[in-house]
Length: 134
Image (cartoon, rainbow, N blue to C red; front, side):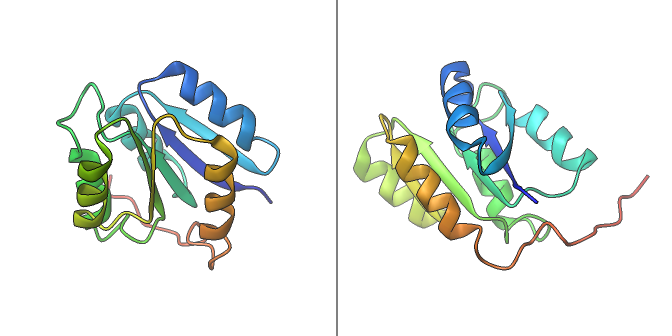
């Protein structure tokens, strides 16, 4: 069974690129905004990993990253950041929010795929079943 990867970025080109590159090995779900991503997570099983651009149109920069890495429900999900921020700032913020990996734009999608393969070889977190409050 393919592992689920959630890609969250405003860039339609990057969503398409990653869906194309990852599709042979992963089930790739894409979202253009934080609201869409959180809606998908609330309606489905948790993804095995998340790839995110921290500058989303419907949130403050890094707000969703902070939420995902501090939430008891989501902090165990491997998180990869892709960003065009200055590299020193990206390194600092990634360490501050405890992200699992980061890539500076432009990035090599094959390198990102290899990192996802490594991160998702850990015991699958998507087998966790969570009760949803109605």
